[in-house]
Length: 216
Image (tube, rainbow, N blue to C red):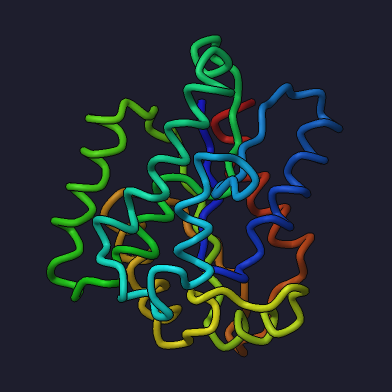
């Protein structure tokens, strides 16, 4: 079983995955954790170069099909190298980002009426042609972009070409929510009606409640 934590940059994916791992360990539930992209591995180098601006300083300088392929190479190499046997054994796998991130980010490069066709191409490409396993559940962390930018401003190491572009992040959020509606992703609101971020532990409790529906 594969459970994916998805969301735009700065939405809290890494934080929530860390909390989730603590909860699973405390409950004695075995799992294998993934984290994409893998910038420290050969398969992640194209994605790293893209985000560093080597191929262009703006997200749209690389077309969505090419950019998607950069991340897909990282995922399939990870699967073949590291966790194919783990998956075949039926173990629980939790992932910070997955193919769903291509839907979120590269789907944003299309107008809304063209995104469904792109999603269809993307999932056929990665799950069909490349042979990556489909996730059993995707949980989308939905954080308003204004809140995201405030959180990203405190990130050590500076912002990549995605994170610097507020308009792009807004489109990514739109694309993610559109994919969530089409593919039945579970959406967790990460801010209240006032736009202020919810407590990290509250979000974590909601995520664990959702996951408990399928692992318990």
